[in-house]
Image (cartoon, rainbow, N blue to C red):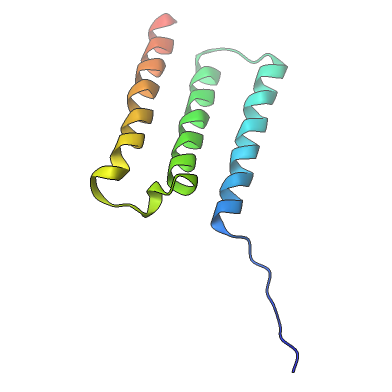
Length: 91
């Protein structure tokens, strides 16, 4: 009897591919010389999303509930918000 195997990509592989794509996008934005408040906030948003994905999938915080899931999220949100406000006030 022939055993049929199916090829599936694990979630952490998808996350890794997204991280690579986000990194490529930010690199291309820098190389093309785009600037402005919207571009800066977009790059900051990508960095925050990347940090959240790393925390959830590669640090294992996505499986936790309660207090231990919050420190990394707060650590990303507070500096991200302060940097975003600083960019906004600078214009």
